Image (cartoon, rainbow, N blue to C red; front, side):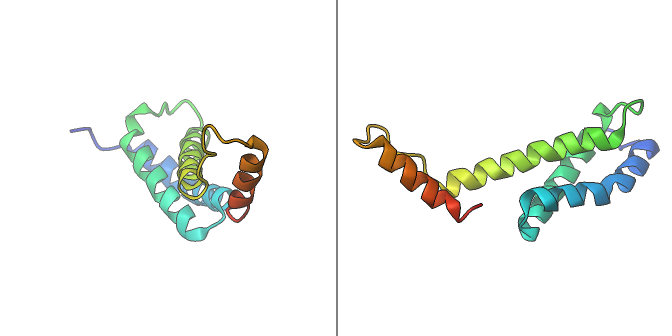
Length: 107
């Protein structure tokens, strides 16, 4: 079992939460999805608290974790809502056009 986070981590984590939440909301757009990404980011930060070097800016490290969670969430949405073009299609241009149209609602 990992050790509980140090007081310095907890202080930095608490101070950065509003910035992290704002980053998730501005990156995701949908507030419900942003809350999920924010919560997952917080869990990851807590679990990786021992990886943070107190000599480095906490917010930079935390935003990097959040950015990867936003990217992961975006990839998941794209794969669920925008199926990839069918291999071996006779008309690749039509496939690409329909792919773009199916993704337009997501943006």
